[in-house]
Image (cartoon, rainbow over all chains, first blue to last red; front, side):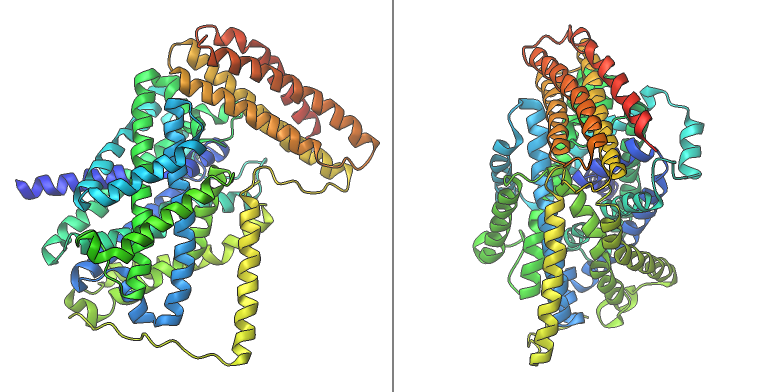
Length: 409
Length: 172
């Protein structure tokens, strides 16, 4: 019974923790602009993150070591440093976007400018990282993130023509207002939002923090293969809500406040309050994950002691790095950059760098020296290699598409 | 099996490789700079022909339509008692900022000829009206007059229709 409860709690946490600022913005933006014609990308992205998150969790459980620890050892210091530089830069952008997302959510409740709230938000993130145990931190914000289910309820309350929604999703087309390039660019943004690299850095490091072993592999699979797809449904609900309530009015999503508008319109004050709690939890949880991921990647590459499973004084450089990264993210955020643009760039550049993260995981998951009998089977490799091809195509296409479409303008 | 950590010795580079590294670094810096520039709101590009200028005018008008429609939807939400003052005030304020930002950006583009001057004057007037009405709505909502929001937002309906007509007329 205790085991069942633990698995159920893990699944709920995975659902609530799946959505972050990138998903909120990308799904609402594409829903308002392309309706459900890019829904298939969310499904492809969710399958991809399931395949690789399961792999990275299994690698961590078998080897007792996290992704970046093994990347340096397996690829060598030079290629791993390139990987680290790209991953750290994108993670920094993502952290800036997440902290700004929390501040924007708070500003919708308080009417205080989000720029004034960003330092306060970052301080809160740091306090939670410093004080809360890893498991509690993960579960509290994951479970609070379940409040985003109100978005799915909003879609049901709108009372859409389900056949029409399904038809749009299963028969995608490019409207005459758009070009194939903008369609592909936003598709890449959605794909990048679903497969953000920090998710596997955090997932595998978290597995080490929680001392996963062989006996935890079933829980890992349940979290990933049940929790993530259900979290993906929340992404699709965000897209559907925007396509039903914003697209017909000619509204394009340029601000986080617009993401909440369909729910406020349909569900009223209680619905809006629940959604704002969900947005706060989703962005705050992701801010914790990205801030920790900054510390994890660098500390694992340099061989420093890392993690929350040791006392802060024993991982002083790791904690100093997390704090320094948070301060730098706030400085970027309050410099006047548009937080929604930062979010868009973070997910699109994530897409460009995806092979750097996922290729080493696939290599290590096939290495019998690390994995023993738990190395990839035929099914994992079929999906893993198929996705590697997709990741490479996406990576090559991202920057040219960004230039051609003027970043989706 | 848990392998030992290995490979902490960095590779030495020849001077030829240094040149390659420098080139790569410069290319990466250029991509980074382009990306950072893109994060600044409403980047302005040149319009050397009337057609290009007209395209930018349409994009601007579509952006203002989005801001106007967002504010109208927020006003309806407020009138129904479906929202909190701080949230709805923020939505109205952001809509006004978006519309005036678009106007500032469009005005900073050099019109290439006399025909473009006329187009600029016409669109400017439409956006200015919309910004005034958005400001009226923002003031009213910030004062907590949520029940009257639909009434206050009524002029925005006309702005929406005129801007939509502008878009339809000039969109090729």
